[in-house]
Image 1: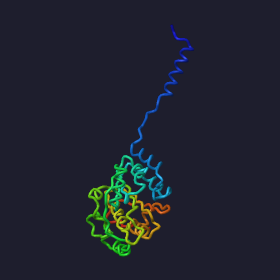
Image 2: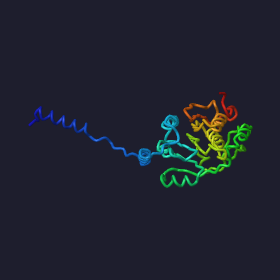
Image 3: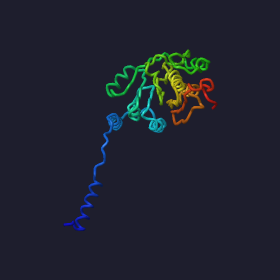
Image 4: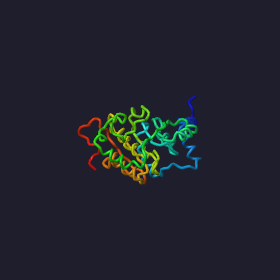
Length: 253
């Protein structure tokens, strides 16, 4: 016996309802993202950067990730940066060893290294003069340059990795005896120029201060500046390796 038109209609509708009500594929949220959501939802401590400042680097990171992201400084925003670069490698360089130990206990998944700085804010003027010498305009591995502005005591792997994004938000630079960010800014620029090819996005925070303002413009270059928002400045620096003989350290602004 053939099914009636009414029976066929019901069967077709039931089948259609089953297709429509079929559960969507469930994708598990990565534990690092879950941890970040919970942390920032429950913490009363906010990152040092404002929302608009964070947005400048976040929009670039969201396009580039997963990528290699180097951050000078380990702070309240570190878990956020690592989470936004999910699947990539995010490394933090920190001057305060005890602070690293505190953060590692709370967030053991963050990759961080202790860095000793041998400079002081009071030396900034002299370091600017050194940075303008011809030996500091030569593009090379920071470990082997003759320029005294380059950081030479970093872990070997830091020099051998091509960084897609670099954030300079450390070391301390708000008092005279602080190490200042002179060498961090110069070294970040050297990392970018010395990569095999492509470009590096560099962000410098606290540009309202003299050192961050002057050193970023001098060694990351006005001609490479892409954006400025509040206290953060964004530079996009191309590789100089493929055109060492015809590309100046800074382009014409």
